[in-house]
Length: 366
Image (cartoon, one colour):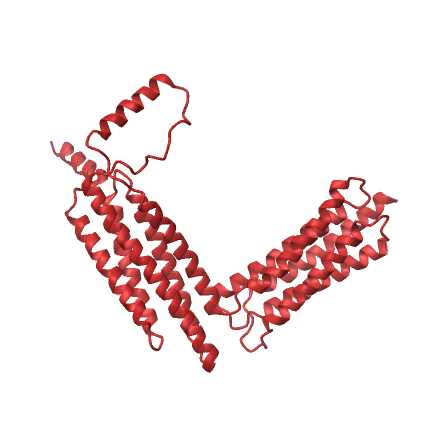
């Protein structure tokens, strides 16, 4: 009897899970602009109902000899609430751009994932005498509560969502800057010393490949390479300033929206984010190319792309009324830093790849 009941509950759960999966398909489509937008407060309220029902489920499914009809009803109510929550969430994205939609959907998906885990564990543990399995249900109910509570921190405007995404780029750039500042010049005899130490390690520990340390990586730059590194550090530092000013500018647009109900082109905001992310990729490339032997050609390419990105960013910002003076000054500072780096790279010794290529061509001509 117990086995048959558990199989029945499993089939019922599968049916509910399939219904939720079908409901999630609405997230693949942008709601029509003509639809009435659901307020985010309503979404939060629906989330709170899901959270309360999860708590009820946690108590009910861990009780002694729970009534099967009650379990069925609990499961039905829970998934009906979850479905209603998803439909409300989708309705809240009327007029939302891709970045805001992505943030909203991610929050909703987290609640779905936690709910699935809770109900699967509940059904799986039905009739079990395993105490650990029973104890896991309240914990999983708690994860649903946490996910629902996190809705209060989900961005509710395109400006906030894009501002947070650009902030993530800025955090990444700051990490690269910190690593770049750890680069140090090496001594004149350091190359010979490193060669001797490496030879000794190979002789003494031929089978050990895990004793190499990365702590000294980047500590053997020549003076010329250190000059390039310092100029690259200036570029990345100024890039961080530009991103901070851009975030401040977008925040000012949100204040304008709140004060006079004006709106701004969402496509331009999305392009600003895309440009920022592209610049972030080039900053990563700068940082990676500074380690010896420095890749001059890669550094040049990254610097050029950052310069192009800044110009594109200024064009997008000019679409809005009253671009920030601080932002424009930051862009000018970054332009100067990039030009100085490019000038230094143009006068520096070709990197190893270029030199090997030229030597190969000489060998062929001979």
